[in-house]
Length: 160
Length: 159
Image (cartoon, rainbow over all chains, first blue to last red; front, side, top):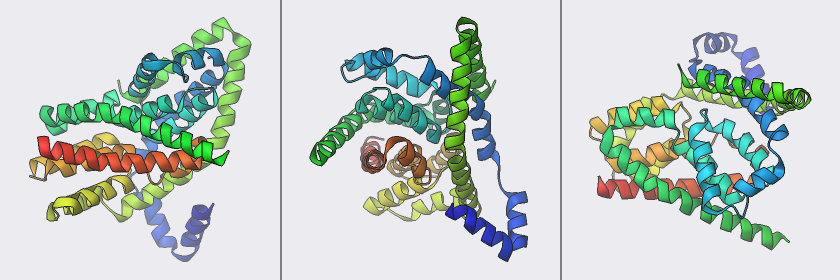
């Protein structure tokens, strides 16, 4: 809301600048997002309708163990798209009974180990950097997921 | 084929398969999609607008090359800070990081920069708060920030 008001103000006060902004901005990011949107929203609807709650709880819930983490890892690595698209998906999965640990694993792998981005990392940063980063980040993702779920757990308990 | 095309095609194939199995529920899924579209899209637009403004004000190559003049803990802090405020597609980030690495920037700083860039998103935090809750979003971003520094330090030592 605030941003819309500010942009309208800018438009009123500096029309030249606003015009320049609209015509000269780099829209590649906006376009990348727009390409993903149709499939993304259909995916959200499908998750909500198709996958029964018991299925998600069984495979990704609190008692799914290492297999559940592996599934959320694969999910995060395979689905392409920027991170802010992953938040609603994780939100729906959390609402349907996925554990906090797996949600964090999902989000972190989405960010760090997206397959189509890793191709670029290998190409630009070289094999040594690529391998080192993957080998070090991999265990740290699970440490992070553990920490976050613990902190969240204690925070929730204090409130009750 | 580009990744978005593959993604959309896959989803489309899954959806049409589902449509033949259960027509009524597939229609329901489309309705739910429209609902989540209405809920999320305005926020996405606003965030994109902010990112566009930022891209105009600062260029990533320029600020990323400013890391060269720092060393030690200041360098780690600066690269993590830069990584968390910048939001650009990952392949652009990787190409710039590759240039920096060849230009002789300390690998630990680059690792911290890349890790915080992919994990910490300051400007899309409204979406994260809306979908996952304030506490979850803040804790996740803070812990990612801390571990970005740790990953940077480890890689700096090992590389």
